[in-house]
Structure formats: structure tokens, C-alpha cells
Length: 259
Image (cartoon, rainbow, N blue to C red):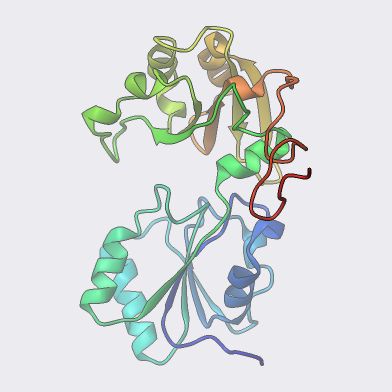
């Protein structure tokens, strides 16, 4: 086996659900790890289809941090390689900060392997670029306050909506009416919204609606979890606006202006 993985914890982003969207590094580590702890409610079984025959697979959907972290520590101390598998990308709502702190306190080495986020997979499915020259050049990734976490007052959804940027709204399906009301304070009612359910899973569904229909469509389809909302003027019909990046009149270090 080339470059076998080490006895440590690998915190891996599994991506949105499609096994083919795993990074090459994530795939290698998952296929070689002795122990894999995974959020079974958010990570589909297909992600684990190429694990070692003797790999120990541990579902963590019903476990607390006090059960998960000691188990990882114990396995590493036994000389085993451990994967902590999270959905999407680790930088977004993955609750890894407290896990890393406890691992560091126990002097357990760990490494982070990033993954594709749902907003990237959704944009690809929609065949859209979320930053269109002269239309929108900013992407905001956010959520709305819920039972598990409160959003800081300075990051209230209404204040972020004031930018009228491409806004990717996570963990909001249970609060869709409140979210829609906050967004409508600044976005026009006809702003396109992509309602993306279980992006990358076999039962993926995407609805493209106007902002004023966001709540009613979500409720009609009983969406309460694993739903991402993309709110963006970039979702309108493709405009004739062109980026300067590949324009013949634009010069840069690797393509000097011709005379």
C-alpha cells in the first residue's frame, strides 16, 4: 500500500452526498482508515462503499460529543487510523471546533480534509455562476437562528440581505417564513431562489422560484431539513455582461497587451 495513513484522527468533509464529489485525498483516507465515525443522518452510505473490509464503522447520529471524542482518542491510542466523517465542508456548521480542542488537549494528532459544500454542488447543478460582473460579486454563506445555535445580532439575516448579494442560506427550512420575511426587506419579490433539497443524494430535488414563493413551496413539499436556499440575481437568465478576465483588451502578467 502506497503512503499508508497514520495513526491519528482525520476530520474529513464528505461533500454534499455524491461519492464522486469526494476529493481524491478524502477517498484515499476513507478507503484506508481502520475506524470511521460518521454522521449517519447526513452522510449517505454510498460514501462508505470503498472502505476496508475490516473497517469499524460507527454511526454518531445518536451520540454526544462526550461519547464521540473519547472513542476517537482510545482508537488512536490503540495505534489505529480514525476518520471523523462530516457532511459538506468542514468550515460550515460542522461543529468541529470543540472536537479539535479536546483532541489537542489529549495530545491526539489530527488533520483536516476539506470537502465540497452544498452551495457549490447546487450552483453546478443549476449551471450558474454566483458572481456575475456588474450584477453580483459577493457570496454570503449564512444561517438563521435556531434551537442549536443563535446567530450574532450583527449577522441578522435582514442586515445581510441589504447587500443583495448571492446569499446561500443553510439550516433555515424550519424557519422559512421568518427567513422569507427578512429577505423581502431588501431583495425584490421576484428575486430568484433555488430551493435545494438533499443536493447530491439520490432523491435530490431543486425548485427555482421567486422569493415571494419561497415559503409556500417549501411548506408544500414538507421541507424541514437538509435544504439549502440560494438567493441571487445571478439565477436570472444569463446576461450579455462579460468578464474582463479573458477579454482581448485586458492584459495581465501572463498575457501582456499586444501592440
